[in-house]
Length: 143
Image (cartoon, rainbow, N blue to C red; front, side):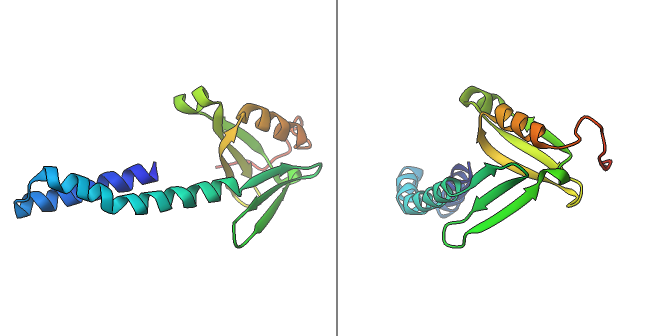
């Protein structure tokens, strides 16, 4: 989506400048596409590398997030600190079987967002089962 947005904005800007200068739009559009193609490909490659190097590991007592290509970062979140698990799916995400999961951590005062998760309902079910005391409502209230 970022690539398409960059392409549309840059193509529109080039065509606007071309109209102001009196150039024919038929010559500007292919030239714009050729100039922006390496940039679009590099952005796509960077996004794919970042996406492929982000992993989520559900262990007995904590959720571990590993991310990064050159600089590897590992974050762990104990289940004791988690309050709620919410699954969000757009129409397109439902069609392809993906979704976004939001986990509220009161001690941090924020949500952890997990985007583009395959089979998000199963992921959320496993997280909910791992959260202790979820049936006793012993959580901090959220604004």
